[in-house]
Amino acid sequence: MSGPPKSPEAPVAFSPEDMARRRRRSIALALVLGGLVVFFFVVTLVKTGPAILNRPL
Amino acid sequence: MSAAFETRTDGATLTSTGEARDFFALLKPRVMSLVVITAMAGMATAPGSVHPVIALASLLAIAVGAGASGCLNMWYDADIDQLMSRTAKRPIPSGRVLPSEALAFGLTLSIGSVLVLGLVANLLAAAMLAFTIFFYAVVYSMWLKRWTPQNIVIGGAAGAFPPMIGEAVVTGDLGVHSLVLFAIIFLWTPPHFWALALVKAADYGRAGIPMMPNVAGPAATRRQIVLYTLLMAPVAVLPALMGFAGLAYLVVSVASGLAMIVLAVRVWLTTEGEAATKACWSLFGFSILYLFGLFAVLLVENGLGLMWALPKVIG
Image (cartoon, rainbow over the protein chains, first blue to last red):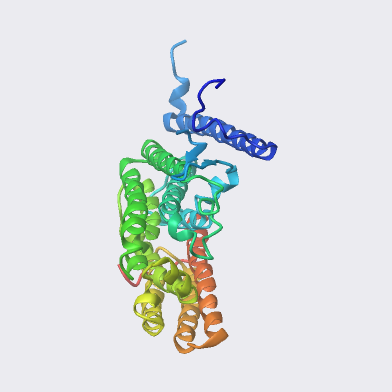
């Protein structure tokens, strides 16, 4: 017997179509995360109000 | 076990091939759109105002929370969804999304949406969103749906809460306006779903879901559709009589309420053949337009300030 013991996940081989799907899913996830960053930034500005600019330099 | 792999009891390994659109489908986008418009109406009719960005952010949280409860519903119901023609192509029964992925997705979005609404709006709104998700995913999906023919009557409360959450976002409190909007959606739910259940009775029977037509029979269901529609139509006029909707709403609610009654009576009287099926589909389709129409007019009148005010008759 050669090679390391196989885990349950080892036999899975993705087809090129599967890989393309997973790539599109990853891109969508990245876009959602980016959107969340913008969302929290804008909401923080609005919740804090103009006072956010009043800070000692 | 990673999110991308699951091993079945027969040893076969399942792989995840779901795309973003499959995960979006798990959120029941059509239900989400109804939740958004009803929550917006709750905000617009609330006595007070809120910063537009806060309103938009709150709406997003409410929509995601509603979608999360839909996702948890699909996760729990995957076994019966695969038995019904209407639901067999959903992402989980069709194998595009793994059950464990859907569960993780639904729970993450549930917790996230409640936290965000709490931070952006207030604790009452967040608590109500959490209760709505719990009510739909646990009380309705896990308990009522497979247990009683009153499933969608009681479960309909989950779909009726969004206007109350909307009002809570604006005022931090609950008032009579959103209670009236709650009542409209609550009374609208049985005629809407039972019209569908009459057509899909065989599907529900195969899945073992005790819908009203399968348990009480089509004749009793038809009578109850008329009863609930007769209750709903006058309640839907209340916003105009209570002074938080104007002339346009009065006209639309009376005219479309009469149309709902006519369609419900047609479902009651037409019991055989293709004509009966057509009558059910007509009521089902129009009921969606009816609810969208009512809340859209409320929004235009209150949100855009285009209200031709009427004298207050009640309240």
